[in-house]
Length: 237
Image 1: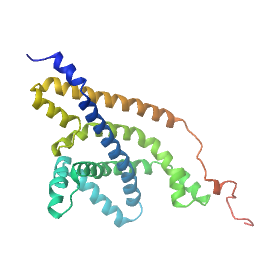
Image 2 (image 1 turned 90 degrees about the vertical axis):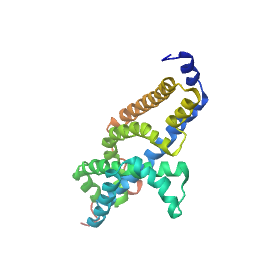
Image 3 (image 1 turned 135 degrees about the vertical axis):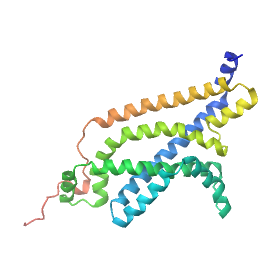
Image 4 (image 1 turned 180 degrees about the vertical axis):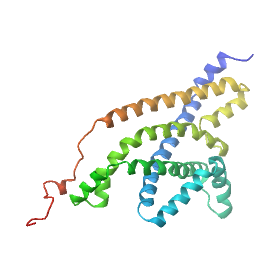
């Protein structure tokens, strides 16, 4: 028999699938949050000095130019050969963070470059330091443009975590493979896994829409308290 509704509903109600979906969700979230920080850090470093830009460019070229699966296998199987043991979770999450940071660095660099130079010059005239200028002027505007791209990247990351099944990380695909070996019903089992993936992406679609609506409202830049009511020019000029 090609399809069994009984097997499908039994698998759908198993708590193991829910736990595997949670593992998929938290691992993708941890990776994306860390990769956003890493991507913006790489973009800022690359814009500071020419030789640092070359280093960042080499990093991006290396991680974007090689398959993620190969990177994962090197980290998981290769690093223990030199005495570095990260375990299943550490190897999987760290590899995804390094890989995703390379992609987000390029996107972050583009959004930072799109911030109008006049606003940056105006913030300099207020006496803002580089960090304050980035925190209150550059980053909020860049992040508005970055959010739709980030939403697509996170959506993709929810599915990319399936590659972690190759190193026995218990996410949706890995748990589904275990269930297939127990039931010999791959169609029903992987259909359940697909429904969980669809549920995760649907949930994130709602969150992304809410965030985009919230950030689409143009708000005045929040000037730090220390800089409020200060004259643009020193007294006596």
